[in-house]
Length: 549
Image (cartoon, rainbow, N blue to C red; front, side, top):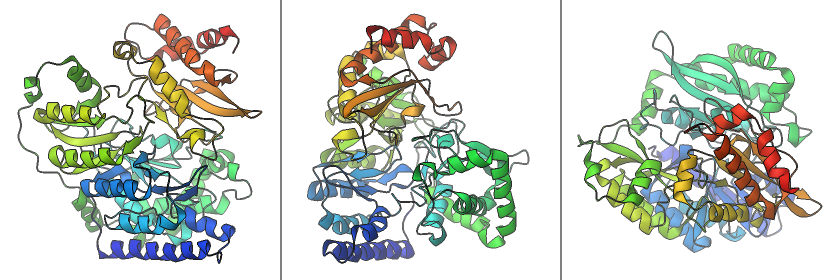
């Protein structure tokens, strides 16, 4: 993974000291709330319902063992013994004190972490495939390009005050595990007929109040022109994006209002006008970026070694749901589940962080990756070590064998923490975990995604779940709107609202009714999304609202 050089350290340390001074002036009353707002946001600091929340960047989701131990220290010294993995692969500390934030940032800087541009109307943390570099279907490792984008966009003065936040995702595989069509800019590495590496470029995706899928505006962009083209996209957005209404300020609204053809033409014109050689990525620069993501010291291994482990039904379940094929024979990709029953999805304690750091060093070359599904991946595990790793994961309550099932819920903190939320998310998640706790039944249902958002900002991305739940406010009471038919990946689509919102206590029954219709109507082994596409939403709607909700 990328290692800071002296310039990186200087930039981050200077930023910490700058913010320390800004915080001191704010706490002493020298800086007004209005003046301090953009300063704290671009350093990842939010004011939530109960306490300030600090969002820390985890570029393309990668964490070293040292960084995880440092996060654990922050949890214990400055928070309440745990932190939260977000759907953009970042980390949030939900109970910090304003006067401690500069010290927290100083502590994190010691292990090459920061909170720069994790909020505000700027280019946010670049996300990627959590299986980058190890997936069997990967064509090109996207991480060097993510790092190039990170360095280019960090503290970029021209794009520090955009109309709204701006999110970029990059993948290099056939399967889209980063939801690139739901980003302001989505990039997929491809190879053209001449064997040259470049990108497919999607622009204008996003969820929230007006969910939209991105539009493909470039079928092939040579890799040398990556930064020049991104600059052109951002300049067109900066020039024409709305600033009078924050709900209509995202680039998706601009693409939709201009039309994809007109928007693309303006980007191409800007690109041709400004595409000077100073923005071209040279072979030397690309080689330098790739040098930080070299292949670990893989061994030649017995590819069936895990079969020697003791026969255990629980272990077999875990192998089936939490272990994926690795591109190197004898290795496997393991997902540690942060969805243990009774805990909030994505939360991880300081003790778990320390032990995952140990496991990463013992089993996976000292690194881990955060996923958009709020879990953690160990990407390079010997198959002969799987049983030992599973035993440790069980002791840590990180071995729930439910990845990809209805119980692998993606959920925002909701009204229990967030001041923007209209309704609570965590009680819904807890009720669903209790209702659907039969593993055999979950496995019979197959892959089925469920996401719960506490408000229209859609931090849990409920629009792209097979079953989505959105908290809404009705005259001061919590209600929930259901959506069906969302999907991520190559077939990305936005779910459709099922009907009127329902009260909190009706949600588990409604979900069970949806699942019952699926079971009754599915063809053998047919996944939920295909059943939904085949029969439509009416049968689901009739069953859910049959009781009067």
